[in-house]
Amino acid sequence: MNAPTVARDELVDFARLARWMDLSGLGHGPIENVEWIGGGTQNLIVRYERNARAFVLRRPPLQSLSDGSKAMLRESRILRALAGTPVPHPPLILECADREVLGEAFYLMEPVVGFNATRGLPDSYLAHETQRSMAFAVVDAIAKLSRVDYIARGLEGFGKLDNYLERQTTRW
Image 1 (cartoon, helix red, strand yellow):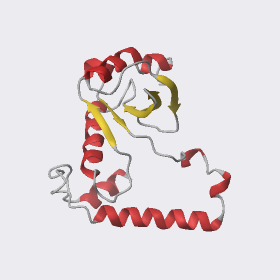
Image 2: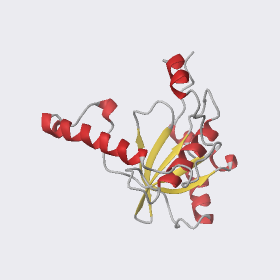
Image 3: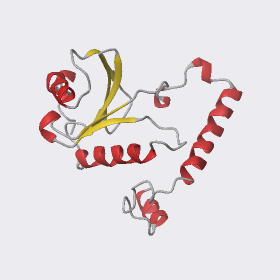
């Protein structure tokens, strides 16, 4: 069964978002240059500007199979823990656990320059050497991530470490 079609304006109440941003010290004035970023399958992503500053908002879909708010707060916890590490990631601006604001928890992060690889590679990335350097960049990022002390970064108890591979195999 397909989820009902919903207008994008119903997905994010920008007037309520602006009021929350006002109260959170994130500028004043209208939200402008709204751009829906597609390609994701789990969450809604929208880029916009306010007071000449760019923001990216992530929130769960309207109909989620699991607790989308919990997932958003887990993601923001990871971004907060990665702050100040060499691991490439979008910096967290602020999260909102209050479901009254937009119907679900959400967070704001800094935008990053890039593209959605699930929609194809831009022509400038088709060269063998460019793809090779991207592959090495992924390996470098994983190596940097492996050196992060997750306990010192406040992620103790974040997930189940025991039998991780066995649990993944059953999901595959």
